[in-house]
Length: 119
Image (cartoon, rainbow, N blue to C red):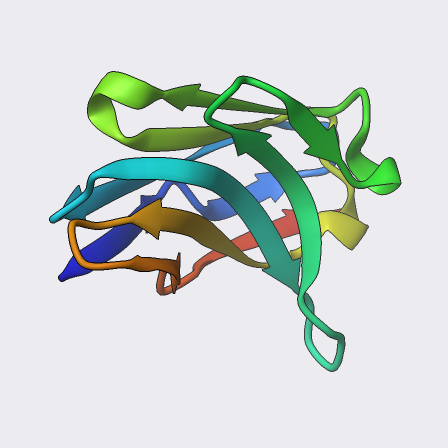
């Protein structure tokens, strides 16, 4: 059984910063992709940033230059450093991972962490 546990959400004023963390635990052979998605009320869940086991990264255009995704492979943890936050960044942020276990490979989601940015 694999679990993703997120932390770091909260309330911040526009222009401020937050750092999200997501730790994967369980029977993990390797983690291929770790990513952050977000979903605002009434909207679809969209990719924010992703990183692969090879170290490549990808960002949504709306967060380029403001957000940084990083990964600690030894801790099976992914981080999202969010700077210069805007009210439109308000959403529930979900951690995503594509993980190989001894049995198979599958996608996993965290429970979500709320980020609120006030103007």
